[in-house]
Length: 207
Image (cartoon, rainbow, N blue to C red; front, side):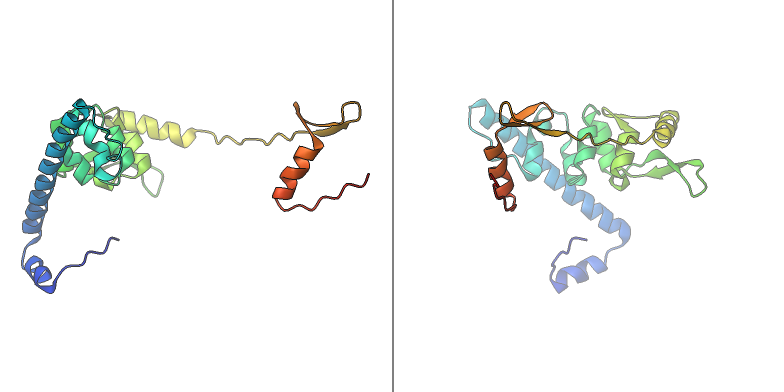
C-alpha cells in the first residue's frame, strides 16, 4: 500500500468529511489532473508537429500522451487506471464517453467461478479487475457479453497445459576436422574452452 505523508491538519480536514464528500473531492481532483493531461497532450502534439524530439517523454503518465492526443484514451482513464497497463491497452477502441463512465466508477458484469465451481455473475469496477479478468471482459475496447465471458471462461478452464520437452543436443568429436559437433553447430574446441572458463570451469588439456 502506498504511504501518503500528510500534515495532521490535513488529516483532521479529511476526517470531518463523509464518504460521499470524500468521493466527490477525489473526483474533483481527478478531473483537475485529467484537464492537465489533456492540455499536456495538446502541447505534446504541437511540439511533435514542430519536429521536436519527444523521446524524453516516454515514461510515467507522459507515456500515454500520444494516445490521449489521438483521442484513443480518455485522460480520465489514464489517471484512474494508472499502473494498470493491460487495462489501458484493452481500452483502445472504446468510445471516450464510455471510458469516462467506467473511470468514474460505473461497474461492469464479470463471469467468475464460485467455491463450488459454478459460474456466477459478479459486478465490479474496472479498477478491481485482475489481469486475467481484463482479458476476459474486454475485447478491443468492447465489453464482452455475459455469454461470451462464460464461453471464454469455459475455454480457459478446459485448455490443456502444454509441456515443452527439452530436446538435448548430442556432442560429438570428429577427428577428421578437429571440431566439436553440437547438434548441427560446429565449434572450435578452443572457443568452447574459453567460454567454459568464463563460466568458472577449470580446463586442462591432456594432450
